[in-house]
Length: 317
Ligand code: OXD
Image (cartoon, rainbow, N blue to C red; front, side, top):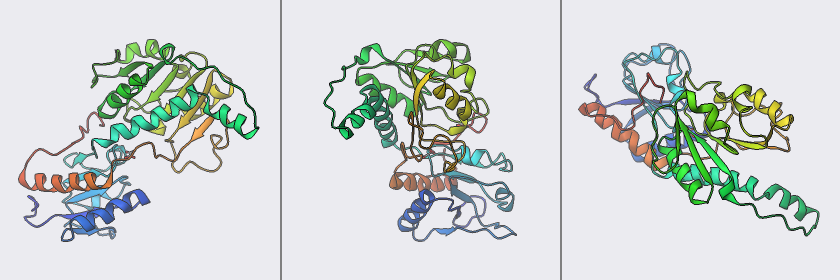
């Protein structure tokens, strides 16, 4: 029961993508008695107490005067907390489930190994019917720098280290893995970047990280470094990244996230032979646990209990 209204909660889901629609269908199947709406009229809806969405466009929150919880269906809640008109008292959660770190670790390892073991080159040789043995490189000589060591980054760091790479991490304030050397705080970033043959971006997007990786910082990477962004497109300055690849300072990039998604057909990233584009699929919290977490949070909200995976809105994650 909703504490505020004394009535059962009513949920608004904004079906902005197939990703959200799949969670909507799962929620309906899991909680058939829960009232869920997917549209909001111009007058709004005073009965809606919870929102379950990936993006919250401006203009929605003011039409929900009794909104208490805005839950992200995704691992990041930036699409919700970036809404300029979301009242500060509305609590925000993000989706966390144990499999997410491992999926991300698999994807990041795939990108590192593809590059490290020259898979594109081998595919070319295969297509050309060419038998040519390539040297087998030594992972211990290669440093993978992971930016962001939260619940996902820590798993990625451990898995990549287990593959034999020399792993280092950078974090602003909070490292969850004691197993890799950690560079802490803004002042250490250049030293961290200067050693990273692979740069893996796993930072949340916040006021501090938007545009963080522009030309000056990316140019600190050793020549020939490879960049993997699986966090948010807006953390990197895309034109600067592209220029550094085209100039040969970077050997290439694997990009799963973009400032504008879907990536527009006119983007120079498409069809670039040194850049691999994937459509924001590195890792996704699986549907069942995310729906369960949301239902649990509705219950906790009604009972006045602490919420699972609540976002600190002042930090942005
Ligand atoms: C995300 C997700 O937040 O895919 O990026 O869950």
